[in-house]
Image (tube, rainbow, N blue to C red; front, side, top):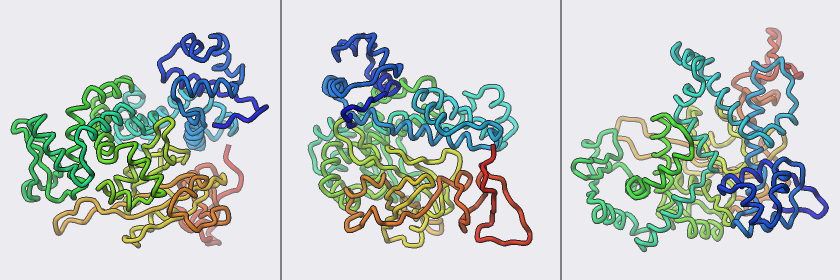
Length: 481
């Protein structure tokens, strides 16, 4: 993070967050930086700027990447607050955008609390059941916990989709196995057998039916369906090893999340197991070095690490190690009905937590071109530009006559990083016109969009039986207050 000469840098809340993540008191970090505790206190209260010398000392003393003080979290928090306060619930409250940005930067804990409250309110408002609404009224925190998927997504975002304990454990395991990618499956089979007395068996689909992996505790057998492809088989073995060999590390990570209900706790453990499995298949140092050398060519990376397209894309979003970061990617997985089943962002892309995605984003077009990788420059209404690629992937095949599961994977980054991607080679990124998209229809205020599915909640709907527009919805130019 550059510290320009003569420019005062006030990063109090972010400085405090880093100190707390390091587990240090103000006195302890003051000793490490060679300044007084009172000066640290003033920095954290934004009453004193941080000098370039202190920033460099902070990075050297605690082995930090100065990008930890960047505004990715604040941008994400601001996007969440902007979405929440666009709801008609707040139409009588005129909250300036700058106040929302100040809140996101100075009070991230309050932003987090507001997001949880709004999530609980939204679920109750949608009227899933009377009992759900009553539970929300009685205990908002408990109601939010009842949605384990959103809770775990929130925990992943809080950790920036990076878990150093699991990364180190995965690297240690690969060092012990000492085998190339094409021999990893056999090595994992041997590891499970010799260290955990677990036998691996590939089973016929008529035995496994709809199950792809099952661990038989009594017989000490790991059963994997024949429908799972080779990269998937190695992944499932690594997942099983992770649950056994990294149980303590996982419990430590889960413990840092605070009190959790049983469902989000279990889902978080499964998520951490999946994270470990990917880290075993694609060890951090080797994978990052290959990604940089290959200009993030996903198909070549998949071949080199004997992994699938989706596995590689997901792994790219986790390259957030201090002083060894990759491009901060965001990822989306969506089905052909527009349902989002996976989303990760290590950058600033403002995913909507309470709606779908924009149909103008070509991630949806991949179902029409299943064998092609599509690329696109997209531009949000605030002028922010991103570069994205998208491709359809097929999950483990389903026996006839069941429908074959298909998903689209969208991977992108801020336009300033795109020149490092092989997919942007030969493109004039500055002159390439971006496709105007919105976060989703309910938050997008772009007019005359033929793909619009609903009017923006920030504008008044105009109904006129004498006119038919390109868009099904016309709305006023003035924002509702």
